[in-house]
Image: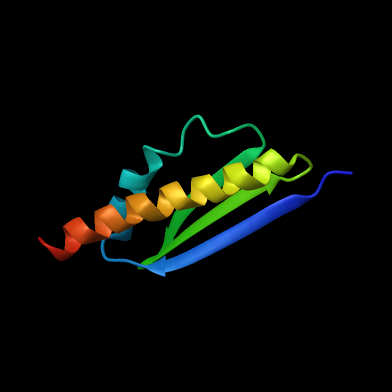
Length: 83
């Protein structure tokens, strides 16, 4: 039996659609068994990751994928603050 991990992050950002466009560049060639979605609802960015966790490696891949997103988001927000 396979289990699924689902993580949803909701973050308020300025210019949400621009932030999503910048983040989408890194949401390609994800590890097998991992799916993500990024969308805006007003000024709220909603990021959802779903991972099949039948294989323990997928848990680590999910963690790394979220870490990549947060690092990229930090860089984008840092640029927004300094403009």
